[in-house]
Length: 369
Image (cartoon, rainbow, N blue to C red):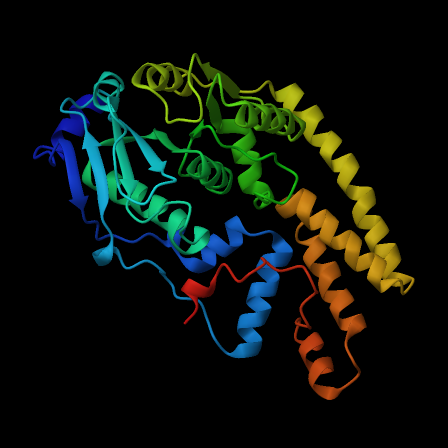
């Protein structure tokens, strides 16, 4: 029935095979600047961005990428699988849009579309280009081709793999897993920040992660081990690690890709009881920290309260919101000088930004109007 429905809807199929300099035209609210700030920054960093914009009278561009100027490489297998294509959005560390050598036959075997953007390498702005380009690529391909939404994945190599993890974490409603080739970061360190609680719950329940690294790449094998341990501490259990025999720090060979895709396409739902116990443990760790920050604030120990709030925000991210944002607002107002302008701003729910709580060297600059 699904296959018949797909064949009716896609009676005139789009082009297949390897395509260079592909241009997309469609935008999605999921790649809007405000939505990326909400999902991809920690709550205190996001609140600081909004406060800074409000004080300056400026705003973010709704869509920071002009698709007419962007180019993508695309590979589409010639045969549509009965349930629809799978989709792998690949974030590269390099500048050009390319398909790694020998991957075509593997993509054919698994019925998997591949897409990657030009000018999306390690030198590019993360939230201004790399992340929205991946989101827009996924959206456009799902409009053009019969894609099975349950088999949409994000992947990358090296620095691009680290961006892929950020996207999988913040967009579990788009990407149902990630292929992390020689690049990962441990959760709970602030990079990447944990997303809003509802999204993180979905990530815990439905994301499949495959970490794939060369046998002779000791630094990234070590970071993989650290990342897997952190994932388990944060109740993310559907994780597989693969070692590429004889490989160093290099993009996966066709054979390694085939094994990784096989694992990616075999998700295992976590046991509800195990997940529940793990989540309860996180709550037992978080609640006393929030209570301590509240007590420090009420006792006037503002610098200590500020330091603790930043630690909570870095470790727990969206799981601690909105309480961290509320405490930060109260702290800001307690610290404000008693002049009319600052009192009025606090009464409206604003206040001066907390030192050190923002996203760093203004990663949002390309998105500002």
